[in-house]
Image (cartoon, rainbow, N blue to C red):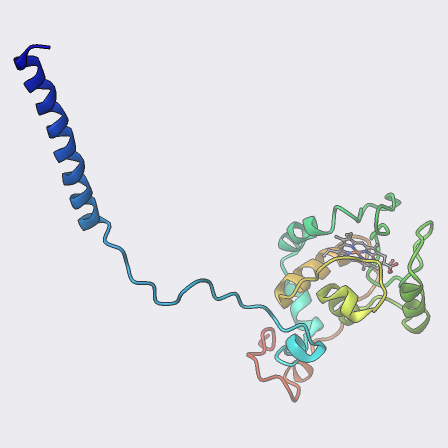
Length: 199
Ligand code: HEC
């Protein structure tokens, strides 16, 4: 290697080094580390207690909310149920029973499905699946009917359940929509804004 070549190589190496140091300086200026206000994540988990979620929630006035519910949104939400339930008339039972006409049906009585004893017992006390019982069941199946074999976490948002139940009703449901009763929705413990209290 001649001296000249050596100088060229050394120069190139030096220039590269300088460039790297320069870039690093530059980027630390551009991407200044931001101080973190809160370390880590704050994960908010609804308390599991039976009263936990329920206390804050206003009773739903079905007569008011059902006529204006978003059935298409409810159908979209039903995607969460489809892995276990069909909802066609005469549809097959899957992991769960076919849900055609479930609104107004006696709980635990769909032909050809082996219900849990818990669901059969529930059906012995409860003549039909009405809006309120469906809503409570779908909100937290295993909390509401201890021992049910429906292993679904539940839909916590009232709007999701309202839209979903409006969709279920549109699929062969036999229960009429009750008259609006805003007073019921504005009942005692309804501290939360009474969604649906307005006409
Ligand atoms: C992991 C499977 C699974 C998912 C997901 C699921 N279910 Fe179920 N569902 C079941 C099973 C199993 C039963 C029967 C429960 C029993 O016998 O205790 C059931 C029962 C029911 C019943 C009572 C039916 C009757 O004939 O009395 C309703 C209503 C219902 N499911 C609605 C829903 C809705 C709405 C969703 C979606 C938000 C859903 N399920 C999601 C498995 C599931």
